[in-house]
Structures are given as C-alpha cells and as structure tokens.
Image (cartoon, rainbow, N blue to C red; front, side, top):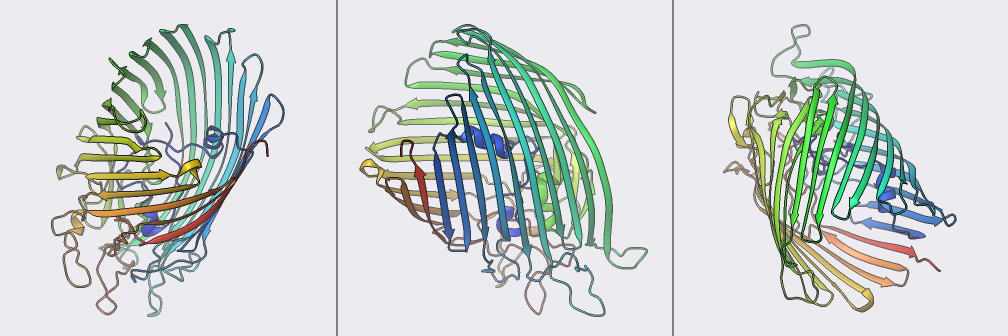
Length: 588
C-alpha cells in the first residue's frame, strides 16, 4: 500500500482537501495520472470541457481516444486549471484560497489481439504550483524576526508538486475459454514536493517501483482460485528545515525560536505472495477468501487475510459481509501537511515511517422496493468499523504550542460508521437519492485517555435530485447536505469572535448546510452548463487560531500559537460557474 499523493493547495480553503490531522495511510490511495486515465477511457474520439468560476477560477480538460487499427487504440488526456486572482473575503489578511496553476498530461495505449492477449501501458506527468498566505510573501527574503525595528515580514506558503509515472499491464490467456489467465503488471512513479512556509522549508522526493504476477484458474463457474506474487520498492529523500518562534528563548541567540534541520534518505521494500479462492452459487451466494503473506523491511513477515461474503436469498435482498487486514507505511509529514500551516514546534517521531496495522469490518443489507419508475428503488443500511493495532498519531493537544508525533503502541483507536441509503425514481427521468452517515471515531491520546477524534464530522446527510427532459436536452440537478459537528482541539475552546462571543461554547463546531445546483442544456455534440456552489453562503469566518493584535484585531502568524490548519467548514461563500463541453461522437 502506498501513501496517497499530495496535490497541495495552501491555507484555509486548501486545507479542507488535505488529510485531517491524525489521518492515516490506511485510507484509499490516489492512482497515478496515467493509470487513472486508462481506466476511465470510454471510447470518445474527442471531448473538450472548459469552465469559469465567479472567483476567477478557470478549468480546461481535453481527452481523445483514437483507434489506430483493429488491435491498437490510444488515448490522450490533458488538464489545466488555475485562478486569475485571490480574495480575502473575511478580512483576516490571508488569502481565502491560494494562487494556483495546475497542469497534467497522460497518454495510454491499449492492444487487443485475436487470441485474447491484452496489453495496456501509458505514462503521465503533472505539475501543481500554489502560493498562499499573506500578500507580499517572498520566500527568498522572508525573515521570521523583524530587523532594525521593521515590522514582521508577510507570512505565506509556496508549494510546488511535480510527478511523472508510467505503467504496463499484460494479460495472457492460457486456454481458449479464458479459464486460465496469466497477468503481469508494473508501475513506476516519481514525485517531488518542494514547499516553503514562512522561514521553514520541506522537500520530499520519492521513487516508487512496484510489480506483480498473478495466475488465475476458473475450475468451473462455481470455483476459481488465483495465486500471485508482488514486490514494492520506495526510496524517499526528504529535507526539513523548520524555524518557528517558540515559547522559550534559544540559549545561543536569546531569541525565542526553535530551529530543526535534517535530511533523511530511506528505502522501504515489500515482498509477498498471496492466494485467493472464489466460490459462487449462481446469483444467490458468493464468497471471496484471500490470504497474503508479505515481508516488510524493518518489520518482518505479516499475514493479510480478507473475506467477503454476499448472500441474496431473493431478488429483493442482498446481504454483504466483509473483514480485511490492511498494512501500510505512514508518511507523517506528507500525510498531514496541515502541520506546516502552524507556528507550533514538532515533537516526536515526525520523520519515522511506521508500519500501520488496521482491521476493517463491514456489513450491509440492501432491500429493493416494489415501486418507482425503475427497478432501482432500494433502501440500504450498513455498518463498518476500522480498528487499529498500530497507527501514526498526530497530536495537537499533548503539549501546548507543539504537535506531537508518536505511535499508537497498544492504545485504542477505532472508528465506527453507520450508513443508510435510499434511491428511487418516483417518475420517469426524476432520480432521487438520499444518504446519511454517522461516524463515531475515538483514539487514545497521550495523557488524555480515550477521546473523540478531533476535527472529524459526527455525521453528514446528503439529498441528491436530478431531472432530465426527453432526449436529455435539459438536465436539472440539486444537491443539499447537512454537515454535523466535530470536536475542536482543546486550545480552540476559548476562542472568541471579533464581538467577544465564544466560537465553540460546547467544544464542537456548529451544524451547517450546503446546497449546490447545476443546469445543463444539450445541443447534439455541445453541452452548456450553469451552476452554483454553497448557495447557502455558509462560511467559517474565524479560521486563524492565535492571539489577536490589540491594534488591528488580526491574528499574527509570528507566534507559537498560530494555527491555520483548523479548517472544518467552507472558507468561501457562494460560487457561480459556467462551462461548455464538446463531445465528438463516433461516426461524425
């Protein structure tokens, strides 16, 4: 399992898309640019999409899928996005969203022979540049301390993220009926992140190579087994140079600052074998049992079993149960880049890549209801639990004005999630779906015992309605959600707004609604769409944490208590966008 790629934006609005503090490498990984594209190819000769947002955000996408001959096809995908300017709507002296510019390009090839051999391969590259914080930040001249009585320099953050990747998949049938198949796959990715936060910097480059071989044999429609072997190798080269103000003076200079400078180069290897058995009893019952045996460098041999069951005694009922053990190395800084958006010092094992160990349990029951304009009317209830045996903890509450990194090491950490989904088409072409998820996440923090995981939503409910006219000439869509509270950090409980009112009187964030709307008009090969996001105009206005200046009322980033990572809601208000999509249909 690999650490998800970090396509970073800066500060408030961006931090909503970054992993929450204390998050884990156990969460789903992002695919490479090229592999993600080849899986999404739908055979369209040409598709172009361009849109513009009211906040000056621009977005352009193009993809083309071209048949070379009866056996070969190729696809090209390109993306470019960015914004013309930024805003400070809450007047806290920080950009609500960063200045951004993003590019990506991917090319994939598919080969299909008459004898059933499949070959897929491709390559991709991306580059993401963002600049946020206070206007005027210049990383080459920034000084954390004022010189000769001059005012403090504007604080900001620059992040440049680049990547290249490639993959190859080969599938070879060993029998005429495809009951025996041999497959080989290989991946390579290089990612490079350069980042600057005030006077601090962090760079991280990674070479990743992986491959696997699998033999699959369908003995009969009821019985299938597979055996395989895999190998992963990752080489990391990281350099952190962090300078922040601290709560006590430096013995050498007398300045209240802390400086940490270190470079680490490490390699992580995983080698393993696995076996899988699939049993099917028609459409009524199926089971998939898998056992992996992997050697992790520095951690030894680990077993990774999993079992998935599906039972449908009648068409109306589907019962699914599953259990799985997941293992993967954490990257504390890459997985939690919000820690750099603070003035806090780092403590503990923030450069160690421990092997996280979790058990995942899940179950669901789906019942199809006998009404609606389609046969896809159902209600589903589900439960899942993630229980950690080992985990990387990122603790904002252990030491004042510090962030502690440490391993779980036998303490408790788990998350229970309950979900209910409902889907119906009450009349033809009107589709309605509703879902509600409640999450109870707890972890045992150093010196505090078992507590509710901070900055994690307790629940979210979503209602999605879409209506299309005949021939899909018009499409109307609206999505509304209610977002539940989350526990704030202890140091946020006493925060007050400009009027002196407590922001989190009960230690939790408020419940807030969101509404998005989109209208699409189709003209043969052209679609024109208009939409709006966050139409309730709800915003988290008091984002920055820290002492306020008595003269300006603003939070200064030049203090140990400064924190711009405590983002729990939308940073910007209503956004209106418009776009056009052109699709060249085959045969034109």
